[in-house]
Length: 132
Image 1 (cartoon, one colour):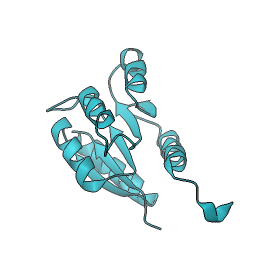
Image 2: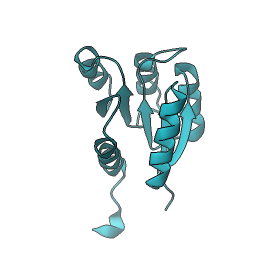
Image 3: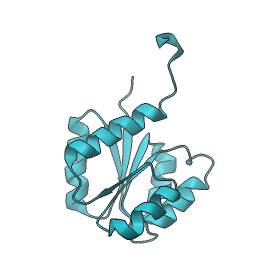
Image 4: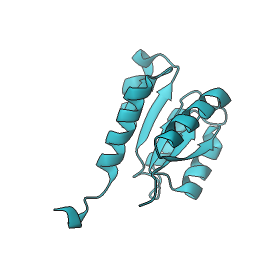
């Protein structure tokens, strides 16, 4: 079976590099977009199993990206975990209502983030009829 692919949407190169290393060490493929505009194009091209999305992005913030994902028939099934430095008091509920699966404030705890990724990917997988 192929390794799950995770699209990282963030404009912080250090964070992207750190996430890439952690995710690849945990047997995930990664792709990257650095702004809101390229996030949608990259999601269409890569068809990721999960998107890790920052809110504070150039060329369309995370709210715009969530809206476009949710209104796209080909992308709306992709689960999204929000990872942002923004104040969670004002953004957590809004992002969860917009369709995000989970919300983490930067810097996120590695173990918690990886557990959330595993849970989300497990829930997103169709049940294998051969295992029943």
